[in-house]
Length: 222
Image (tube, rainbow, N blue to C red):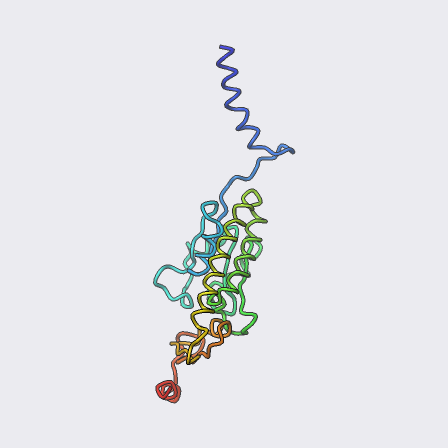
């Protein structure tokens, strides 16, 4: 009986000690929940967080991010999350309208187009995506210090991949005879700035903007 009691203590005691810190408080072992505005930010969050956080997207697959209207379930998911990752510049109006109501209930990391005011498409520049990933990792590591090293290792791997993509762009575009790129709407300004390209958008920054007949003629002549 004594041997059985000793064995039970050996099994139970380490678990009990691991669940408490030096002050007697329980260690927070729950998974963090992250809500990201749309796919590029979902990819970033999933890469850094790995299996230590639950990452969900505000924008369903196949839906234009600009046009989303939040459902009650999405509002609840955002409110109950630990961290919201989103793009500013009125990229998703329905999401930004919600923020004043939930700003005291969760941490939010806004990605803005500081280098191109009015243009939210900052994720199309791999170098700027590295900076965004670093901001996200810092905020996630602060909220979940237990897994901070894991998150920072994932950040290093993601940074290496984005630097490799940047190198591919730099080398692949170094000898282009023409620098103009024609796009359906003017969403590629950050990419063009980074790699010395000239963006020629058929429509404006907003994808629902209709081009004028004059603009269509100009692009056609080009």
